[in-house]
Length: 255
Image 1 (cartoon, rainbow, N blue to C red):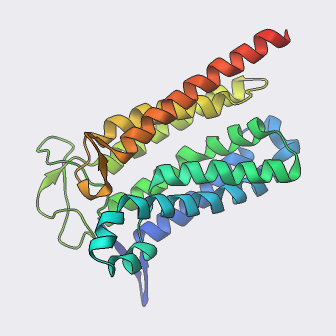
Image 2 (image 1 turned 60 degrees about the vertical axis):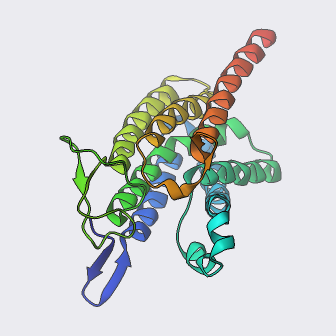
Image 3 (image 1 turned 45 degrees about the horizontal axis):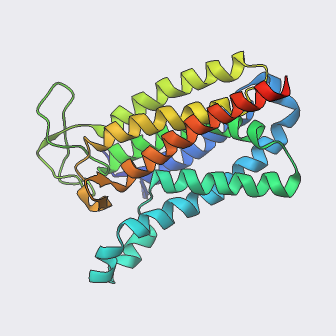
């Protein structure tokens, strides 16, 4: 684990580097992932930028919401929180709103934009979780098994010297499988019409709900017996199922 990478006199946070790589490759896949979308690549690119801005804002806002009790208790924590920390689901929700803004402004098809941008999301998320692993955040519960990892004392937040579940690496693998599945769906479909979006919401929501049970960074916030992300996962899955039902219903009445 390398929270900070030093290149001669230059030092850069691993999370920053992987985040930038995730943005680059995520947008690259969104724009060039499906050859049949060549005529709308410029719209996909600019819509991705709108979604990126919305995602960064949403990720930070939800992070601040989840740690509000700590901020009220220790106001000095706000400065640190503004400089670090994001919540993926906040980024996802903010990214959707950012994309909707572009769609409304330039009168383009929402589903075409969403299906392409969502295709690049697991790739960007993989790099982001590699950054989490390197920094020592989003760590798992104690686990003395074959896949366990032990963080050094230099990690930013993970308890050092204790075998833990490598939850960020689990999510890297899960997002890789998810990307392959979404790519197959996108390329085999003549007109996916939101299918990539809905399938992503369902499968990522289910996977994230489970991964939350392995997390050990309890300061992220809980509502009753579930974490904030687990509650959001439930709504995300329901949104995906509702989207598929709506799409099928709409197709049946237009035949």
